[in-house]
Amino acid sequence: MDLSSLKAPAGATKKRKRVGRGDASGHGGTSGKGHKGQKARSGGYVRDGFEGGQMPMSRRLPKRGFRNPFRESYVAVNLLDLCRTFEKGAVIDEAAIRASGLVKRQSDGIKLLAKGNIDFPVTVKIAKISSAAKAKITAAGGTVEEVI
Image (cartoon, rainbow, N blue to C red; front, side, top):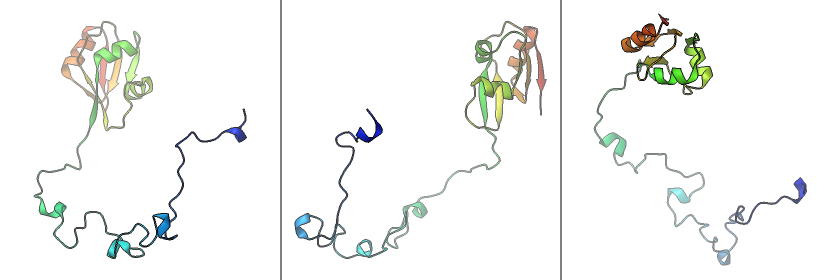
């Protein structure tokens, strides 16, 4: 088998629509554009949300709420996840957590939460950490440094 013998599977390719080639083709006459009107014209189109001059739905509906442009989003990581991923005596910072694959999505930062237990000492250097998580890490003999 070589590349020249490859071909698309049945149904993968479709003949292109040839319009304006006579009524017998099924796409003659108005060439699938209906009768007259803006969309039948060359270059004729209607922008998204345009309702023919009627007040558009997006402007008719009431606007509610507030979107805070300064909101910070944090990804939650639990002690349970750290136990599974890191070894005794490890130095855990944001870069190490991202490198381990615990956090994949982009965010403003990582917050360490106290779900689960940790039974070995680790050094944690992170910006946001719950007080319960901090207590569990220090109880296990580890240290916590809040990085700004």
